Amino acid sequence: MCGIVGFIGDSSASSVIMDGLTRLEYRGYDSAGISLLEKGKIEIVRSVGKLVNLQESIKEYDFTATAGIGHTRWATHGKPSFVNAHPHKSNSLSIVHNGIIENYLSLKEELMGKGYEFHSETDTEVIAHLIDVSYDGDLKGAVQGAVKRLEGSYAIAVISEKEPDKLVFARKDSPLVIGVGNGEMMAASDIPAVLSRTRNFVFLEEGDVAVLTKDSYEIYDENGILAEREIKRIDWNPVMAEKSGYRHFMQKEIFEQPRSIIDTIRGKYRLETGDVYLDITDEMRDSLEKIDRIVIVACGTSWHAGLIGKFYLERFAKLPVEVDIASEFRYRDLVMNERVLLITISQSGETADTLSALRIVKKMGSSVLSICNVVGSTIARESHSVIYTHAGPEIGVASTKAFTTQLASLFVFALYMARIRGLMGEDQARKYIEELIAIPEKLEKVLSQDDDIEELAKTYKDSKDFLYLGRNVNYPIALEGALKLKEISYIHAEGYPAGEMKHGPIALIDKDLPVFVIAVKGSVYEKAVSNIEEVKARDGIVIAVCTEGDKNLPKICDHVITVPESCEELSVFLTVTATQIFAYHCANLLGLDVDQPRNLAKSVTVE
Ligand code: M6R
Image 1 (cartoon, rainbow, N blue to C red):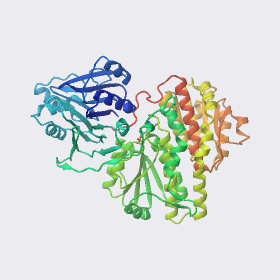
Image 2: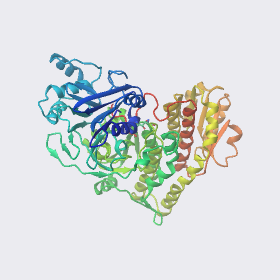
Image 3: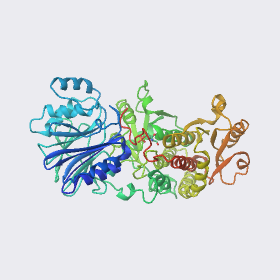
Image 4: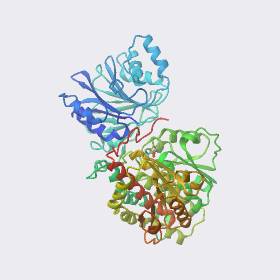
């Protein structure tokens, strides 16, 4: 949700922090602020709205500070406003916060009783005063004492005029990483914020408190004991987090998909033998041999990937698979044990509901395997094993390349399970691997239709509603296509299993309703054609995503987008990309903020 950056060193703190916030703006963008230790005094600048407003405000100052903290906000307590923007202040200290403090009201009453005045509606101001009330010359100690009283989630950064040579950070259920530089230290909510200054990162664990000076960092665990934490070198490079000539990150990320799929599957197969390799622990390997059921849990786009994973695993590995939305799963009466594998899927590795499901299930004795894009993220660290997607940083709030790399990982995992269960022979495995290897090139052909799809978007961008239909493996693509469109263009769109159309949504069909039908060649092609006929019989507009060379659909549909022929299981990579491009162009043509759509945040670290 919110983005935090802290810096201490010899360079201009305002420049480093503002640069970092620019790279974290995807986490929240309703207001922003910075707090600097300027000549021993705290100076705060805050602005409502996008970061560009803060950039303008800060031009009025000539800061020389070499230490400070910054924040970009996604409102939880109190609407986006100047008073609610972070940083907040209490006497000589200043703080920024990501997360939700659930017991803030009782703490607020207590602090008001001690004479503190509140200037905002935020839960964050409570933390500032709580640290201040017990401050006796030891900022770290005051932070340690304060966080013990907090219920909920937090990542905080604190500076104090009384101890200007240090920054103090703490986290629980909200991410924070320390960037270890040369003669400078940084901390941030996410790696890309400071990737241009270091590739060496230390991931804070639950309950940690960290003290940074320009030459050192110390981490204390939840019991206050000085802790050793491994430095991880991150192989993302700063250019990966740039737009590189594309108009938006989302557009760049759509076009990066052939490369990110290659990166994700590299080293995971041997074509000659049809063998599949996973970089998982021996314990996980053992438990995969014993499981008799799989539960996949995720949110949003990652949940859609899970629905396709179910299809792969049931088809190849003949294992029963349930797929659940994390925020629902965690409140059910779960039937889990050591013979059930939990797979969580998360691009960010920080999604609160998915993380919570993981923690519940771990206690019930099941093994947890996660498919994740961010090395060192909380979900990655708390899982028994991780299959990393190698999508590189995904900055656009609407997920694209993370989704297709999740699909690639699930496909490879399903092949692996089929092989170890003796259900797929060498030849068949080789055939599927060859099909997978061919996907990036086929994707290039879909991407080359960008201009045609843009023309289509010009025709339909002003539609009020869309229906997306798909059956079998195409159903999750209908869901994902509709989600992409609504997220960034704010056009209402419903994804539906095509067979359900006549059980209700058919009532919506008229001459103004564009219906996207995923109708590639495969086991349910004829059924999709019947759905198209039914829509046309009611004057609906049909945009079909069909297989190259299909002679029939161009005759009966209003528009077609063609994708190269591929096996049914892998056609999803191609069809989803067509829907991503369409959604992108609708939003762009409507003049909307594609990368930072309203009300959304990239990393949903609150329930
Ligand atoms: O980081 P995660 O994959 O766990 O995030 C899950 C969802 O919040 C995410 O996929 C969301 O639906 C995106 N905005 C989709 O574009």
